[in-house]
Image (cartoon, rainbow, N blue to C red):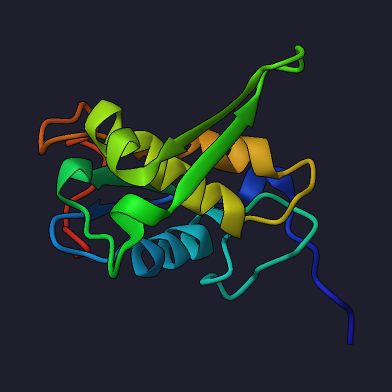
Length: 141
């Protein structure tokens, strides 16, 4: 019996939509990461990018449990002296709530060459209006 390898041309990508209103951030991010990687497919191959497109709407209404709005911090550095920055999750939600979802999903993807193309298939929008309405027929959540 031979091991089948999926050719790049035969990969089919479908579209999934998630409504983030009232959903916990981590639980949503794990579902999104699974779809972006392609682990839900029967012909999943770890060394190929087989994932689907994911659209997330209502990112402003996502739920952070516990004290995370005040205690969770996002760090960045500009690679210059004194360039260390930290932003509290509540402030980041007020600035741009899309970044919170993107950062959570980014942390759940494998750290390899496929991470960047997988993240480009994640589309996050602050409200229900998005330009991808013609790509799918059913809503997921």
